[in-house]
Image 1 (cartoon, rainbow, N blue to C red):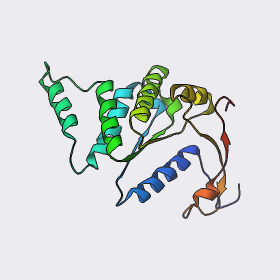
Image 2 (image 1 turned 135 degrees about the vertical axis):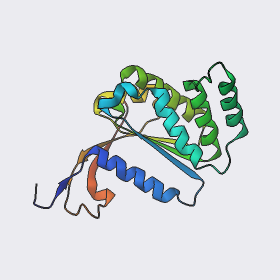
Image 3 (image 1 turned 45 degrees about the vertical axis):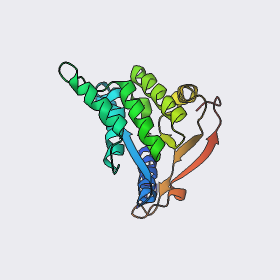
Length: 190
């Protein structure tokens, strides 16, 4: 590596994509929500917590919370001890918000999610994609989960292989110069 250069990782590229989406969303009827999985905290990051965190990010940007969502939340609070929202409730609420505005859901390091939670999460994302034409999902992860992602999202996936590249000007990165990439069709492997 040349002196002064910096090696960029998939997490760097993911952050740049999210930053770019947020910049483009300003002043538009667009929501951007993101979640970074952490291997060290994988047992504390079940699918309900992850989707709940995404829902909070989307709801914060709404001018008004849809009445359907308020009613569902109030009904859960009335149950003994104030039962929390279930995965299906959270998914439905994300469907509602995603049908009212273009919504980008960004998930980094999906491979660091436990397999049981990953299945539930991908199934929920599949449902959101089916019910909300304005929803778009950006996921990063190691190649070994590529087939699972394609299968769970009904092959509605375009895979881009990102290879870290050296950036000689880390203070002013250009996304086109950060990574070389090549589209991969589902089933081609990682």
